[in-house]
Image (tube, rainbow, N blue to C red; front, side, top):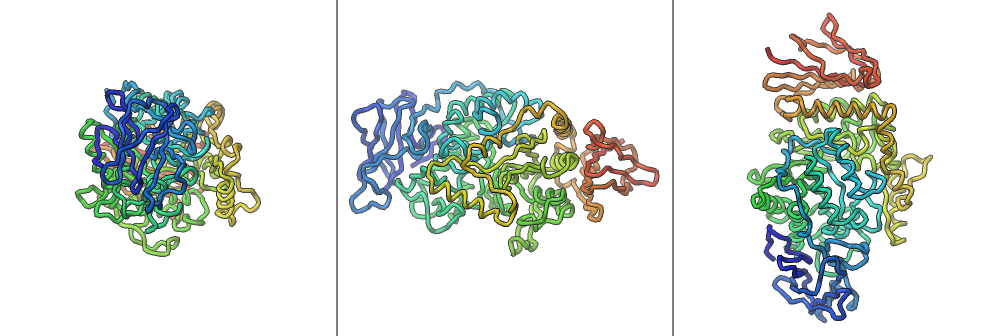
Length: 623
């Protein structure tokens, strides 16, 4: 089937005349019937080329319930087990009755957009705020996010990143158990409410990044194997058989996900996609699926005149993913780099266990400032092999860094946030380390006021065997840790509820002070021409390992910055040979305004005194 970048050509859509047009890929079937709840008789589809089926009809209206009955060719029954059973649309846009119910017709064109003047913002200007719709507010839906947009604007946020919203079982899930990639979670408000959220964000000057999952489907309600070879046994992933990107029948599967990416950009006006765990996508085709998605995204951008970005979550230090297609890369616009986070956490006192064992603290943090990747060819003890490639020529805007995110918090057994693991002063230092990097900064919801509520792993499956399997899996994962404490029950509603943000903390005491600190830090990042340039070439970091200090130097056309990060728990004296001329102090995390002791100063013998667990930012302008 030919992809049409101008409109979705998969699943059920309404054309300009209001007629429903349904495309379905289901090879090796004799007949396909559409059952519409309001009709007494089923509708028969017409067979097309390459396993596709098509129907145009005036008998289906928006929100009507519909499902497919698959009648197999007698000698080919690999993809169906029950001849009389009906299935939801794999490309469904709305599942009002959840993952096990029929699909609901939805008209993507009905929403009246008012963001025609929105031209997007440059990637280098992204200040990203990651949030989970269900726990960001008490109501846990898209409309309640709209009510917080003014707060985010005041904080200085320029882009929100929404964790996955594809339809998942029940009403509690991180989103990575999504079953219908095109359907917007009904309990969040469905597709119309998501369109309204994106429209409202653009009116406030905020870009929207949507987290999507192209490496696996969730386990409950997954009926894709009934239709065709969506999976292959050639490869296996942590979630079972891999999605079929390069085996027999893969062309239609690739089209399915390309159409999905185009839909978010074109029909929901999303500005960027964050592609989850792309290292788990198995594809040895001549053109990798990520590169093909990039090609069609560029075509859509040329058609609409608006920029669209693709950001990969990648557990491989392989810049082929972010190199341009002209360089033989896949053309992703950026990637998360967990290694910066790991080095930062160890610098801040995180135990060197698990994957943290590969990181030695300030030395590796300085290397990440300089090289983005910590491991770019060295031997990794955790992986037991040499790992990574250098990324010398990739610009700073291609790397996203953070001191915490949903994974690094939620994948802890108890879901503890940084605020409960380190001191107040250290948390300020970690935030400063992120915002002074020549990379894109990301903060996780509530981080800016030192939220103490955990963010734990939660689900709301209906299959009891699956629930027990998830429970046992979580307990086994943490068997060697926290033996004195019980693993939170992921199915319990209380686990979900205690993971919600407590917005009352934005008002009193230290929480308000931390919020003020983040506002000042973000404002400095946006206003200072050196900090917001993301120039890796004129960035150099040095580790003073004995003192647990990182000296970060960043230079602009006429301005120079020296940033001192003290990860030790005592006051340090730092040589200041570079401090010739007049240096202005831009930021001190230890001033009384932010509950610090204000012990820093430059002394006559050419040294800087810096308070424990603090950051200093100095600036000098060429005369």
